[in-house]
Length: 52
Image 1 (cartoon, rainbow, N blue to C red):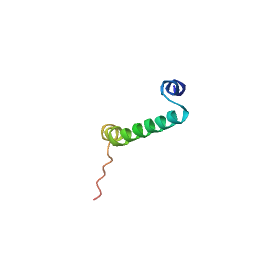
Image 2: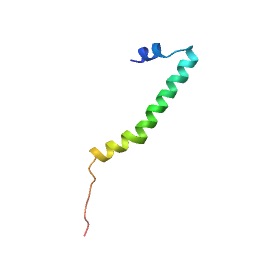
Image 3: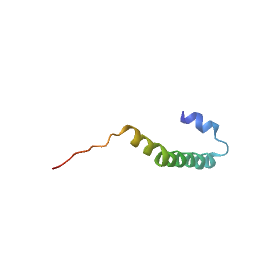
Image 4: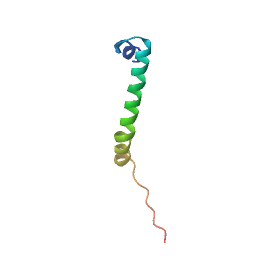
C-alpha cells in the first residue's frame, strides 16, 4: 500500500515526503475531529453508578 502511494505521488523525493506528511496530518486531524468523537458516542456506553 505504501509503495503504491509513493508511486502515485508526483514530484521528486522531497516533494513526495512533504505530500505524505501532509496526508498523514490531514487523516489524523479528520480522525480526531470527527471519527473518534462519533465512535465514542456510538460505541462506548457510559458507566453510571448511584452512590447513596
